[in-house]
Length: 158
Ligand code: ACO
Image (cartoon, rainbow, N blue to C red; front, side, top):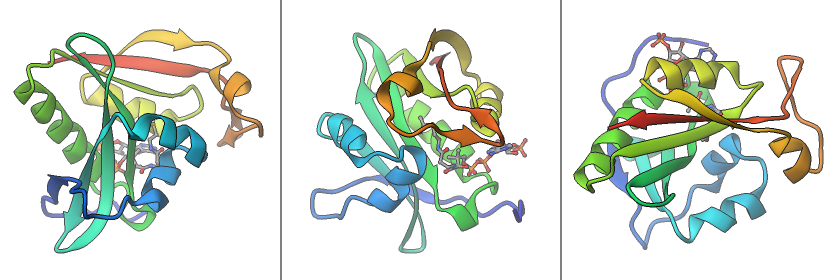
């Protein structure tokens, strides 16, 4: 992975006329049916470099004063260059501007890099949905030889 940092990307809310970038959504969540369940109630934010779509994140209302980032992804060839970090900062700003005080995000016990990134960006673990991936996904999933079983929930106070 080339970790040379990129210039700031521009981030905008997906417009109705724009195509939903499922290729990116599927990087973070392999099942389109699961994605479609939360997408209709969500806002999608697109990160682009010049005019090329290179990343996205999805905000989903999760109760009073709380929003969940349901999906965050960066095009594979551009991962590790600080774009995920920029999008997490942008999401926090958008939520603050909406009067939201808590941002939450969930990731698998096996997603070590993601757990690193979210905690580095001020998220703290507050819950574990045990066996979430065993109960909701048909095929077993492994990352770096670790079975993906539990959903680790993290939150950040804004
Ligand atoms: N392993 C180790 N460290 C990592 C990893 C990883 N897989 N991913 C990020 N990091 C660290 C980086 O080293 C960096 O730390 P540093 O600034 O101290 O060097 C820090 O986290 C920030 O990394 P970014 O470059 O900003 O992260 P990136 O642009 O790659 O975006 C993301 C992170 C969104 C997770 C991206 O790698 C991706 O799209 N992955 C595939 C899809 C995915 O797993 N999405 C998240 C699923 S959970 C959810 O959607 C709610």
